[in-house]
Image 1 (cartoon, rainbow, N blue to C red):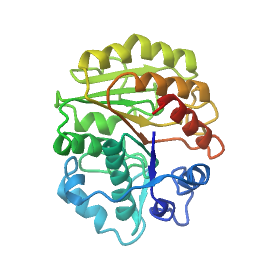
Image 2 (cartoon, one colour; image 1 turned 135 degrees about the vertical axis):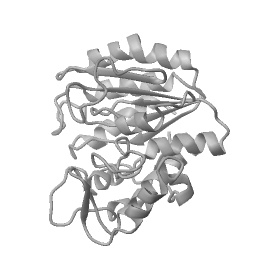
Image 3 (cartoon, helix red, strand yellow; image 1 turned 60 degrees about the vertical axis):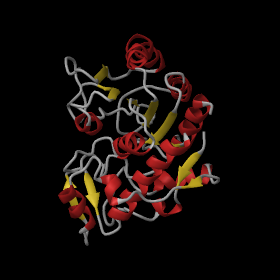
Image 4 (tube, rainbow, N blue to C red; image 1 turned 120 degrees about the vertical axis):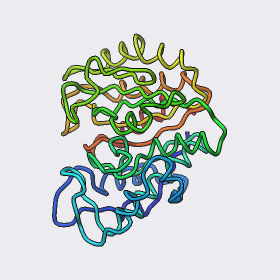
Length: 284
C-alpha cells in the first residue's frame, strides 16, 4: 500500500506558545521512518464543501491569528492550508488505494464546526469524492481510533450509501457512540477500558465483519487511529502492534478497494512502529 503525505504538513497548523498532543511532530516522525511517500496535493474548496457548509470553510480560511474553534482544537493562519492538504492526501489515498499520513485528523469534525483536534472531515470528504468522481456507490468506513468517530457518523447519518463503523473506548470522550446508539448505516462497537488484541479481534469477528459483508461496499476506508495502543498517553486501551496488524489484515479482506487515513496516535516513539504494522496487515 502506497503512503501518501506532504512535507508541508510538518510546518503547517502548528500550535504556538501552547502544548497540544496533535502537533507537527506526529508527521515528522512518520516522514523520518517512511521517507519515500508519494506527494499528495490539496483538496479544492468544492471537495471540502461536499461535507462542510461554506460558511464554516470561510471561517477557517479567514483565521489570521491563533484561535480555539473548539476547547481542544487550535487553529492559526496556516491551518486552512494544512487542512486542505490533509483532506487532499485522503482523496489521493482513495484514488490510488493508499494510506494517507496526514494531519490535522478529521473524524470528529462536524459539517459546521471543528472538534477534537479535527478541522475538516478527511475520511468523509474522501468518501464523497469516491462517490462523486469515481462512480462508487457504496462506501464503508471502519474507524478503529480509540475515540468514537462522531463527525463521520453525523455527516452520513441519513445516507444509506455509506456505512460507518466505529470501535472505541467507552465510556470515554466525546461521549457518543455508546450502547444503543446503532441505527441504519451506523455500527458502533463500544469497548471497555483495558481492551486489547483479543477483544478487538472478537469485535471484528462478531460485529464488524458481518456488518460490512452484509453492506457489500465497493470501497472501504479505514480511519486508522493508533491511540488504542497500550502506551498511548490519551487513552486506556491495550492493543499491541500485532493487534493493529491483525485489524489491518481483517479490514483488507472486507472490500475489493481499500484506502486508509491517519487519525490519532500520540506516542511519538510507537507511532511509526504501529503504522508499519498496519501496512504489513493491509498487505497491498
